Length: 82
Image 1: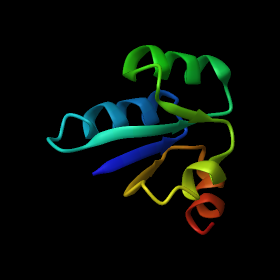
Image 2 (image 1 turned 45 degrees about the vertical axis):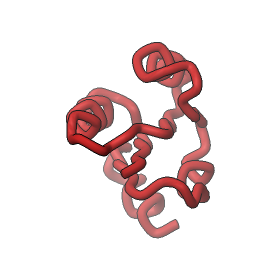
Image 3 (image 1 turned 180 degrees about the horizontal axis):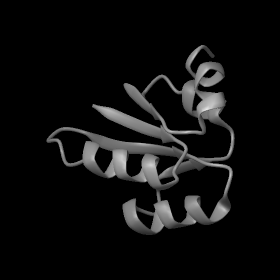
Image 4 (image 1 turned 45 degrees about the horizontal axis):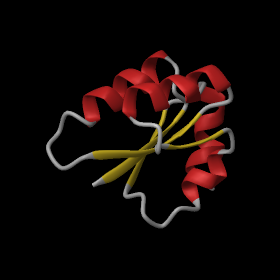
C-alpha cells in the first residue's frame, strides 16, 4: 500500500512513522507548507520522495492508496472533500 501525508508537523510525522512500520506500507509523498519539513522528509525517507507544498498534487496522484490528513483542523474538511 502506498501512502502520503498532508501536514508533516508533529502529529503527521508521528502518524506516518507508525504507518510505515506496517509491512507492505510505503511512503510515496509528503505535503507541507514549510520547506524545512519537506527537506527533512527527504533526509529521513529518501531523496527521491515526492514532496510538494500543494495538497492537490498528492490527491491527484492515482498511485496513492491512502492519505493521512494531519493539517490544522479547519483544513481537514476542504482537503478530504477535494
